[in-house]
Length: 250
Image (cartoon, rainbow, N blue to C red; front, side, top):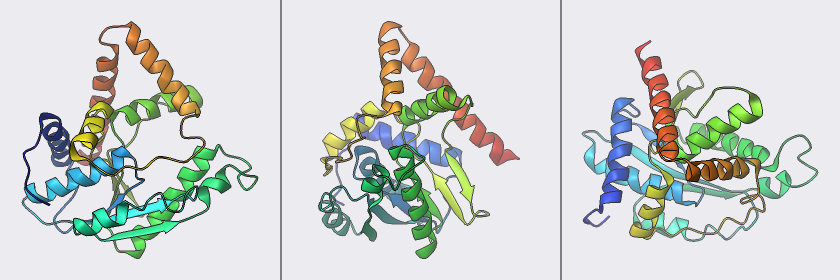
């Protein structure tokens, strides 16, 4: 990757992710990170951010891109492999039928989004074991944390957010979210400035879900009350970080 001068928002994104990774001791020397790449802006910025972190941290870690095409369009991920090859990143790409299945009679008990996400996560766990990866990185951001918190509260009556760092399989795999303190608007600007090759999401539920309704309500409320948006983001990110740091000390 050619050396380039970073913009303010790019530095903000990389710096925020780096600070979170240091605070939580997210990775260790010799870590082998599977990066879950959906093709959306979050996963692209996550990969770009980790590439820069590789140059900064005082130890070596490896990365591998993992892409599970849900099957709505088997060719939409075409820009991914050439970009990964150009940047020297190994990858695993496969196409499933999980997306169409989620919207068919195959899925009898769950929402399409829940079914598809569950199948994708299970397959990602399998791939991490197959390739002997120590970490699985998701591109969830601060907006996702707010949405998950509200969904859990509204739909399940539980106070739960989205873990920053969580061990699975007796510690054989650690799920990490380096961008969880970065707001979506920062990620959106970084995508444009890095000119990352996104592709459209062909899922019919992409813009019609309960989660979207909840966030639309939140943004409407945030537009009416000054500081509400910032206060909610600050409160939830501090709370989630506190949970992670507390568990690390135990």
